[in-house]
View 1 (spheres, protein in one colour):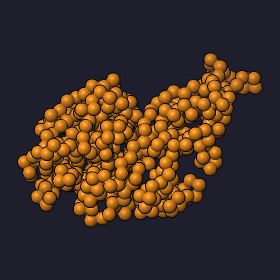
View 2 (cartoon, helix red, strand yellow; view 1 turned 30 degrees about the vertical axis):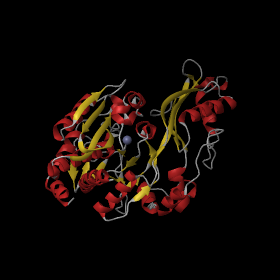
View 3 (cartoon, rainbow, N blue to C red; view 1 turned 180 degrees about the vertical axis):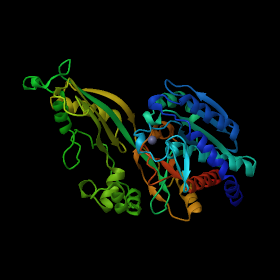
View 4 (tube, rainbow, N blue to C red; view 1 turned 45 degrees about the horizontal axis):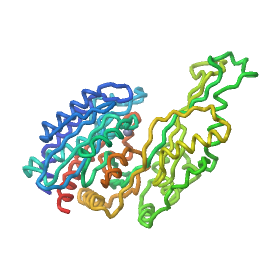
Length: 449
Ligand SMILES: [Zn+2]
């Protein structure tokens, strides 16, 4: 592969520019900004840069950009990525403008650099370099680039049901990946699932003077009381049946947890915290991070929260809640269990609005794709990767992969301080270039097995 690596080194300025061009489009799905432009841009890149057969596949929301590049062997490797990004707020905390892709001291700063445009462009560049050096690909490559990942992939189920033929592949490289503080690459073999809901509690049909609080019920209090029944101080979720389907750890999972390097001190220092939740450390911390389902209050809204005092009795209270799920928890079963739990605790009046549902997805260690990616990271970095049996995060892996019988492995160009979803999102240029080499290596090696 030295010839391909050399080509990548010789053309890295060009590959960096390709990424900057894409990062400069503010494709914020949540605010419907720059979405068409980003979809067209990716479609053109796939068609013009790597000669892909492309189509813009419409959905009930933003379209999926699809591209196929044929190879010599009847074997297919697919890439799942997304062209949408999170909103850039709070903008005042950015040290570089969020959509200018400035590079300083070997780091590129941009919303979307790590999540997920850097990974997408590294894959396009890898295919390009391989084609330029070898004249063609050893296997078929498919790109599935959606535009709604950051808003919960709300129409990917529909895409998955209608386009099994486009999705079909022998293996899929999932969207993300990071380098740890110790320089090791992280390889993830799965993602957690999710039940995301909004709970709405209503009181009087209008906000009132809070003098009325003596006789009129306050929906904010009622919502707080309902939330208080969901989880105890030991972080145990009290919804009946919540843990029923949680699998126990396999010997491989146990080994992966043991081998996982998690920089506790650095993490605490970076976050300015004295300790982890429940004073967790060592194996129990890592085990919980990867294998524990969660119940999280993501935001609460009610009444007056502006400057100064306003004595008001709110008419409504809302909370957004996410539950991260592990195999074999089912998001719809958890939703039903939540409804039942609220009813049983006297909160029949609290509405549940379903926001996003994902099943967890997981690929075995001994799958040829897992083995190929793990070996490729060693070739590029000369370091053993950190293999995560599951990422603590969530993605629509199940609908695009496990549901279709496709194994899936996640690896990418981010770093442990990439600040995804936060101000000053960034990637290291070196990681980006290594990421291009890594994907070129996976293309070469996966075609051989
Ligand atoms: Zn994201």
